[in-house]
Length: 238
Ligand SMILES: Nc1ncnc2c1ncn2[C@@H]1O[C@H](COP(=O)(O)OP(=O)(O)OP(=O)(O)O)[C@@H](O)[C@H]1O
Ligand SMILES: [Mg+2]
Image 1: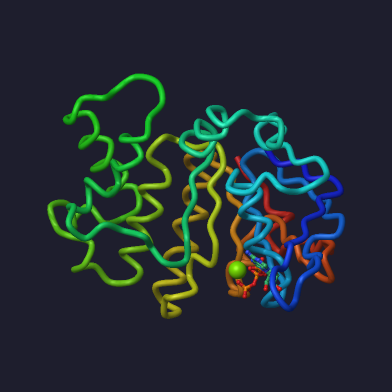
Image 2: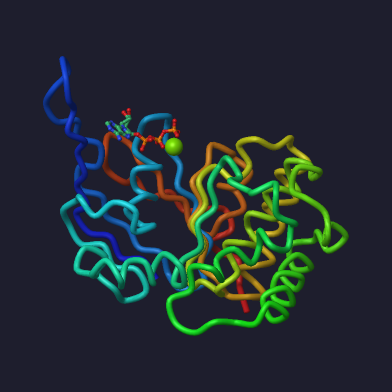
């Protein structure tokens, strides 16, 4: 699903600290189709920077970065929007939910950015409700996100990211704002999604229990990747 070779990324600094800040200095890794990968590394090591590249949000890098067979830097703007809207789903640490909409309208938001074809409102709501069931918050249909707990908001954000059946789900610190019980439930949800929907997962985390649940752990250290086999790596999967 992901093939990264020699990824280099620097930020240009302005003002008094002008110059270049190298963050990724030749990052190599693969994530197989259907795999659950965790990306770890200390604060400032470049995890979110890497996710922005994978998410098609930043094309200013060198090296090879292929996702679902596409070399991201060669995509046109239209192809990149289609990639962001349908090939991948993105979940941020802050949930970015809209409280003036119902939970199911939040889940169906990606339908508004659809490039080809339009679904009926009934079809959108049916899909949103089905996803709320998948992530375990069917009882919240008809309510506003503001009335949900942190763990439920994260489930809602995950349901929204799954709306277009992405091949790859990318999450930045999905349990960063949650207590340990809610975090454990989100991790169980990731494993269920991997096992039942076959979606590939790439999850940035500081949470050792996510890393322990993953098939593969990719550690970023000093701008390069150290591969750590996850404890789940030997597990036989259907
Ligand atoms: N837009 C930017 N301009 C300049 N420097 C940046 C920018 N974004 C990030 N950086 C710097 O790049 C480095 C990597 O940042 P990044 O956000 O990728 O780290 P991270 O591993 O996600 O950290 P955390 O675990 O704290 O979220 C940091 O030193 C950060 O200050
Ligand atoms: Mg980060």
